[in-house]
Length: 222
Ligand SMILES: CC(C)(COP(=O)(O)OP(=O)(O)OC[C@H]1O[C@@H](n2cnc3c(N)ncnc32)[C@H](O)[C@@H]1OP(=O)(O)O)[C@@H](O)C(=O)NCCC(=O)NCCS
Image (tube, rainbow, N blue to C red; front, side, top):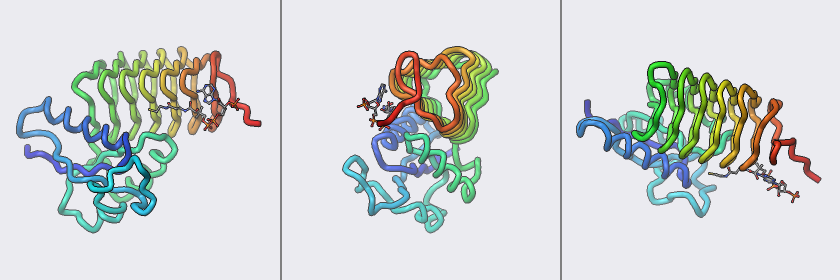
């Protein structure tokens, strides 16, 4: 099978990490398989920030429809949960599941027989999961995350580096779990919630609520 040409949606730091993830996946396969990077596309090139990659940005999302013969597959290089969920929904209308390969770094350990990976899932280097895990489409699991038995990682949810998810946990769609946070066994974190970096979540988190601290409590803003 020849290499597939990949466009990455997003052009910031996480998009560059997804490019590297695809390179690592390619390097671990036979020489004929894998992905060739074409470039980045973004929602609005005029709003590109200082951390984006202007020279390799092809254009806005309309570039995909305007150049259908220039690419084969897509990867979602957006590392923040709310925009990841939104853009996934928008693009999936036009470009179905077959356009979004799951990318699993060769160092990832999990029980492939009992775990289910949706399209567009990203599992970064050093992730360790065990058994009966469900990764809904576009879920993103960053570096060195651990995930225990029967946990469900919701659609476009983002687990930032070194998060620990205990067994039986449910992470809702579009939820962000910050770096180094821990979610204890059988706790449910609702859709669109945010868990602050370093938090220890011992009780359910309602949809859309931000929690921080040890033990995690709702963030109270003045
Ligand atoms: C929880 C979080 C989403 C809040 O972000 P925010 O809404 O912009 O909040 P602010 O930065 O304005 O902080 C509000 C208050 O919460 C406190 N706070 C923020 N994050 C906190 C955290 N993780 N733990 C404890 N307190 C935190 C701030 O110190 C501030 O307290 P103050 O009002 O007494 O000064 C964010 O701080 C966070 O932890 N995000 C995850 C970041 C991450 O994982 N980065 C790695 C990327 S790879």
